[in-house]
Length: 124
Image (cartoon, helix red, strand yellow):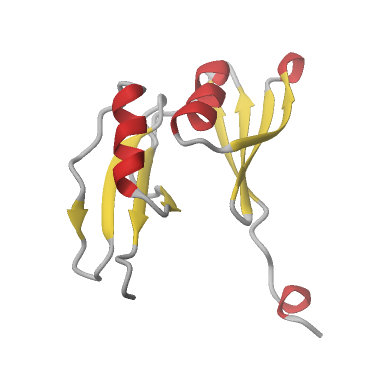
């Protein structure tokens, strides 16, 4: 029996938004993630984020962003990502070295959900 058979595997994180098209474009263009499924008439997009996916769901009524959670993305090149964020005119906190040894940038998607982008130094 493998580990997947004995414990849950996180398939996707669902984000409800009333700015669906803007959110799909931001995750695709700014972060460079691949859209696996996009059904415009249903307001549904499934975006590949490594082993997990992000499902963007169009909804009229949404709540405010919640500071209790964030999406964390490991990236190979933070310098390149800074250029992407600047090109997209996305505000972000300057890269910093975290006490655990990785470098990180904090930003937010168009709905204000916290996005943590991090990379490990070459020598882990």
